[in-house]
Image 1: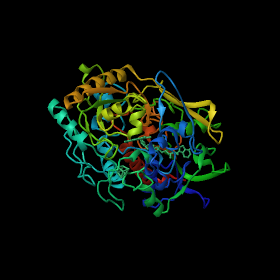
Image 2: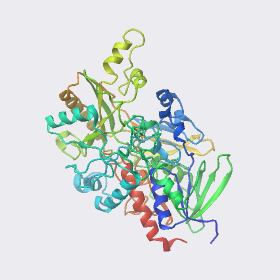
Image 3: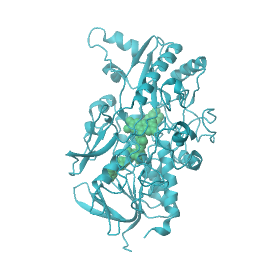
Image 4: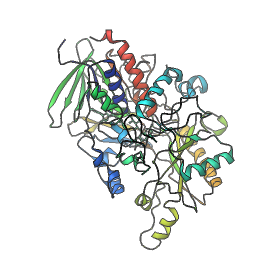
Length: 535
Ligand SMILES: Cc1cc2nc3c(=O)[nH]c(=O)nc-3n(C[C@H](O)[C@H](O)[C@H](O)COP(=O)(O)OP(=O)(O)OC[C@H]3O[C@@H](n4cnc5c(N)ncnc54)[C@H](O)[C@@H]3O)c2cc1C
Ligand code: SF4
């Protein structure tokens, strides 16, 4: 065995890659991770600058890689009836640098939608299989919250107590109580007290522009320092062009470009791809060879297919009294899952979560807020700003998207990244089911905001931001209908694993990252248990 061959090569250092690398390093595996982005210095975060909103809109902090256009970004083009706006970040920590930190779990029913509702497919694993890994990931990431939600299975006391609900959480709680709807305090990947060497949140409210003190659980401050301490090697500005395979069809490593555009080989006994629901199928489709002419691990033809985001819509209420929604973590203080499980009387299958959310700053409001209604410039500007800024509560629909093979990630033959590697193109159309869900949520959110006292309702309409990137290398027992098995091992290449949102069978009606982290820890255990099969 060559000395410089790693045991495990992890590609991508975001939510999934960090968890896999840390877990396997703990067990004693020799782990190397290749990440196309760099470490980001907290002092460079937009959140530390007075022009943070301008940085977001126009500068290098935009959520959209097509606008940022940093050397480590790759373009993502879009098509379909509802072309998505893809949002992601490419750095150590991946998209968790930008993320809000909302940390819900799937419900048990989410793993059994075929059995319960006759749609899509059941997962080959259950909530109970994942539960210990959810618990372990909560501790590693650092969570605040409150155990006891009657709508979800019991869970242990949260590592730190809940963050304040704020005026908006309290107001909506009272409105939901009046309506008799479910609601509970949200789990957040933001610690309210010191935990595991990191300080508690100081409520300054710019989490999506990078948390300067490390209270938000981005994996550059959670998993990575510990993985490195255990001996993991993290190579940054290392963009993988393709996975290498030997004559027997086993993965033998990866070919990557360094920051100066030089090509290198990284060899390993096992390869784990964690490049997210777009980066992963892109890499597999770019890894064509004589043995795998349709792309790697693609004998089912399903690599890139069944792309899911989440039906997403923001409905805001404007209130006379001050809400000061910009105060405190942007993420979700509380949520309602009143409409989560299927009730066919509503006109759609499956369901959604309502998230109560805070606001950005004054410029965002002046530019139009989430409803796209700019404050007039000149005459009337101050009146409009006084009326809206700090007076808004937002209810966000986050619904279950069902898999559809027509929604897909493919290679764009006309566009490439800075190293000449074909870009990804995402084709997406909302289903009629999702559009009916949208309309239901619009009506119900309006009702709840009015009960809370809103005098005006603003609506983003049907939008499709894609920051939950799911389903493009789905998990299953049947190799004709899935790309990976229940241990994330590809059906076609036995020492190749895919561990990120790509492996999701269905999307559930909640944010995915807590589930991505739990799956990553479980996959790492599976890889370690089968280490005798490594060659
Ligand atoms: C603005 C925003 C807000 C969000 N808020 C929430 C939230 O509140 N709750 C929630 O659950 N989720 C949220 N998310 C989603 C969450 O960030 C993702 O689900 C999560 O980060 C996905 O983890 P991942 O490891 O699969 O991918 P990522 O975190 O995206 O990491 C993938 C990594 O792979 C690297 N990579 C890709 N291709 C290559 C290549 N060829 N070579 C080398 N490296 C490569 C990338 O550079 C990147 O660092 C949010 C996302 C955004 C953008
Ligand atoms: S509100 Fe808390 S988590 Fe968010 S950026 Fe500020 S300190 Fe970090």
